[in-house]
Image (cartoon, rainbow, N blue to C red; front, side, top):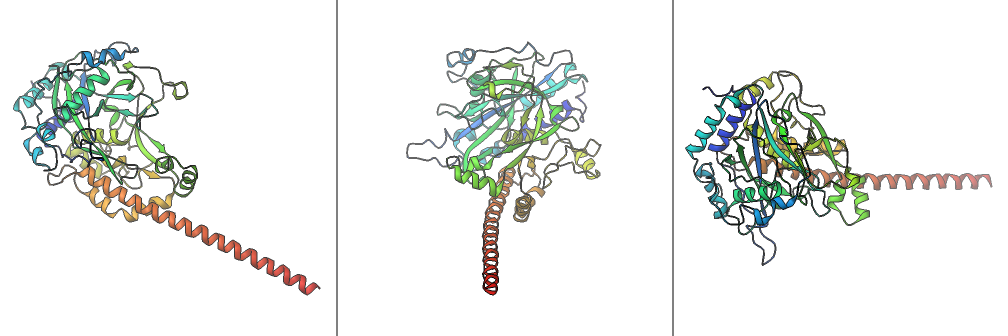
Length: 462
């Protein structure tokens, strides 16, 4: 049986999974731990699971009806990861182990040489009749995090995952354990195929000045036509969603923006400083992809003030970056060729970002650039200053993210972009301060001249 057409979503997905399976992810060394008793390899690394499935044309989108679930189903007492189990072999090449000498031995061990068996399993899976049918839909599992005051990513769209624990064998084990705990899916079962890993991602402070954590995304393929329905840990996850990949790509994708008050991040405890920052630098806006809010499983109800009936989910930031890493592997050479002939701006990485969605013509890119995660500021002069200082960022954008010679394209682009942002903000604040001082000086001089004129007029009148 022939494989699916290369230009179809299943055909693109097969290409992407084969590429992920045969390629080495770029690994990043753990940040230096703070404190004498800190474990540098545990709490400052995290992993997520990107779970992909193909839904047959005669299967309902959500499988069973969505219903509130109990966290007891995912408790540690019933977890298959309560004791160390043999995991499916990770299918990425051994070159990842030499990516950096600073990466821990356990992290390197998660990426042994590629296994031909995984490649063969992928080929056999995509040759099945139900997979190749026109109505088959490729989907990715997203979760919406529970609303918690202590969670920095409270309410965000994310992938199941969490922090590395001291007893975890490697980063892939962390992704599998956290997935079981959060959504009750056992990725060690035969129906799940461990495909490989995407490049490590850096989690930084708001302006990228300090590296907080390293995030390792691992890709899994669900190979059964049946719909897996998650059982959520209510304290961590509010809802789970199977999202068709079509809705993440042109022409079906819908785009919007997420506004972020940078003052609350830079000065969370000083009301005066927050007010000054909001006046001086305004706010940030991040591009996002709108997702349908049709959960297949729900946990505890969110707080009443946070309820917006049927409001679309917003995929942005770190999770959008990992999603775009996956989608970039699904792009074909013909996509780039078509985009060159387009008269419209089909790439959200264009700085400043294109305001509209991707063009609905044959020249549209299959998916936005991975640089689309970077924000714009509400003040045009700050955006202009970022462009002036962002020559290194633009040079990085011209490099191919798939270039085998690169070390970490995402990290390089994020670092160079936020370096330009920091310079632009400093210059903008200084210029605004000088302008304010100049304005006050001019106002004082004007008032003084008027007073002198009045005194002179009075003296002449006398």
